[in-house]
Image (cartoon, rainbow, N blue to C red; front, side, top):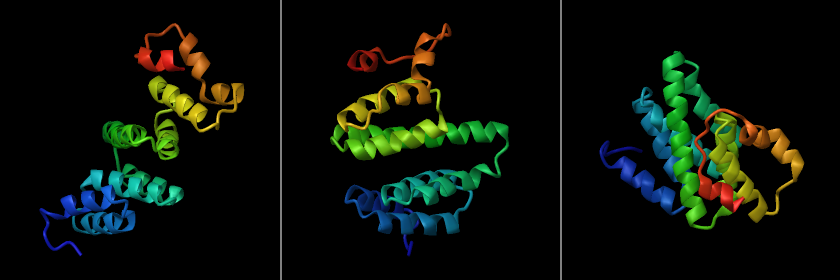
Length: 163
């Protein structure tokens, strides 16, 4: 139970780092009950559910506040969610937890399927994890189309070189 409204987030973060995801998730659930309009609580709760293998529940948690959003809020919240997931994916890559990073990045791809740098990172992780299905994956992701597109895209050249 959240007894210290100012300290619960540090406790949740500590649980998260210790991989005590269910305890951290309980704190976020309680926080949502107290402050249902604090949208970023949903992002972290969804991430915690994802890390517990509850992918459908994670997606439902992320989508719940989005059903109430207007067009401007929807874009802003989608970007916020993407950023939360990106930070955690990068952290997992640094820790060489490639399968977790790959899973998170797959959900990032669902949120923003055209973000080329995420697609390149998924490709790198897929190769490391021996999950790459050659041309089928590249076609499904639209990676080659995006690389060949005549539009200006912000691409991380270091990622492209790694690929």
